[in-house]
Image (cartoon, rainbow, N blue to C red; front, side):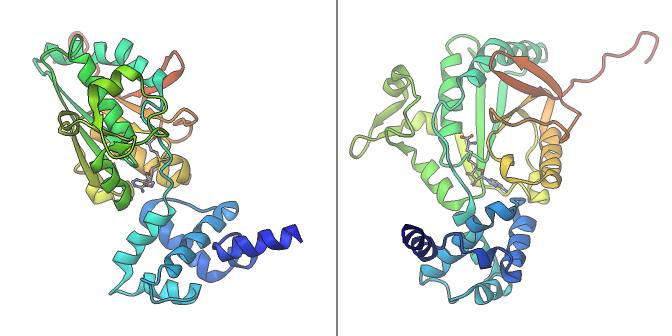
Length: 308
Ligand SMILES: C[S@@+](CC[C@H](N)C(=O)[O-])C[C@H]1O[C@@H](n2cnc3c(N)ncnc32)[C@H](O)[C@@H]1O
């Protein structure tokens, strides 16, 4: 009885209907999603995709009442771009929070930034370009902006920095631009940062101060869009944390190759805590630091004696 209730509830919510998982219509939608953004739904994850399609159909904004009609929309020249975008907004998982990885920030402060600062100063360049790829609702790039502002009092004195923050999900980018966060998103944020870089907002929420926001440019960018990725150039630091876990190996390899090209020599690439580039890319140098690992793009080889 309890099982029946659960099944009925899950069906109503667009849950794990077994017949959908092998339905050729939903398998075709899976392929479309994969080709568009690199996110791959394995058999165990198919229920997430079918549930997302059903949520779209339940909005009333979509003229489809079953999978077949919904697939027709996704392939119809007049609707496909807007509907695919809306479906991707349903599919993407934006779990995040401010100050998600202290070991990464410590690595930045203690090793990566001092080395970069020393190297860039040699050529008189005092500017850092940072990319938060898959920034969700903005917590990661705001953390980086506040953290780098703190370093301007010592390590990065006289330096400027800019942060590009990108995500596939339009709704997340909108929330990110607003920069208003409640207790849950702020649960790891040190009090001194709350006092220094936020102002009170509605309810008990806090809003990121405008001078922090001014450091960041938010835009929608699909990491699977090769032509747009080519424009992301000259980065010193790239963070792509907890994003590629949803990709299959082929898409991961392609996206990481873009990140490699986007980085300046000696620039660094950061992944999420449980991720690695094992079997994905072997061009980076792995740097082991307390509690975290960082991938560095090698600099130019020093010229050999006797060679021009
Ligand atoms: C779990 S969140 C990670 C947020 C943040 N980087 C962190 O670690 O806290 C994953 C984000 O990746 C984004 N994403 C997934 N596929 C993407 C793609 N093809 N292009 C750009 N962003 C994508 C999702 O929209 C989502 O916001």
